[in-house]
Length: 72
Image (cartoon, rainbow, N blue to C red; front, side, top):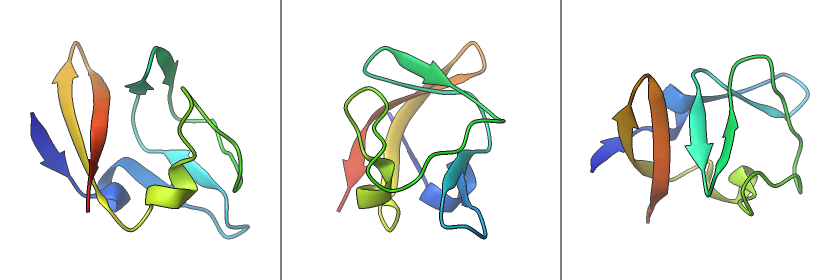
């Protein structure tokens, strides 16, 4: 498992929404660039806005970052 900076995986847009910088998968939900979501929206049961100041624990396979958790 590797450690990633949240800001290397997601960008915060001017309107406060988040967008992935690369293809990610969490709890079976896979999404990538071109997707944006505001506070309260969940992917794979995770509201990424709650974790935006934490590092990401994950593993890359086949060009997809599989998010496994967050570091406090």
